Image 1: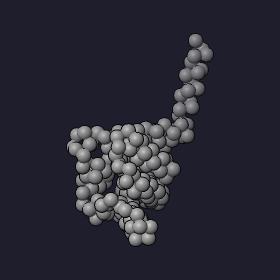
Image 2: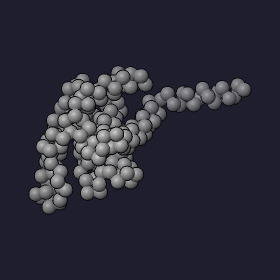
Image 3: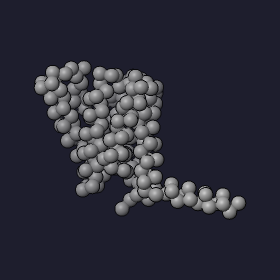
Image 4: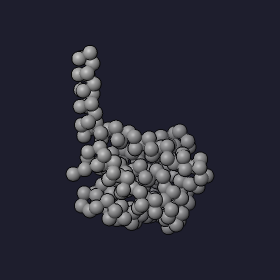
Length: 185
């Protein structure tokens, strides 16, 4: 009986380390990054991803809670596994979506070290779109790659509801989780 209690205490001790929280949190946010777009597509139709940007939510939360590496893992796993499981994003858009999400992951992680989450997120949304525009210009004009109708201006117009959801929810939820798991400074 005493040995069983010791094993349970050891497990609690292991799971309460920052490294364990990081690994488990990254895995959970990756799952959310795969599931949330599917839920939005089922509830609101095939254009829901472009409108509500559900995959972005998990990446942005990972950036605030755990940093650039976690957020980049969430971005990559969300895009790739979502494609493998659901066919979305399409194979043509997959590399662009991956690049876009990694840009946001890195920017928000960097900004969040210097500013509060709200200022960091606004800065990320603006600068991220600028950098993503540069990626598209390079893809089209220098590399001669097709962009399959991807337009930053159109994605901003279409994704405005998602951007609003991000601004209203991501910093609040992320900071709540960060405090709840004991990772706040």
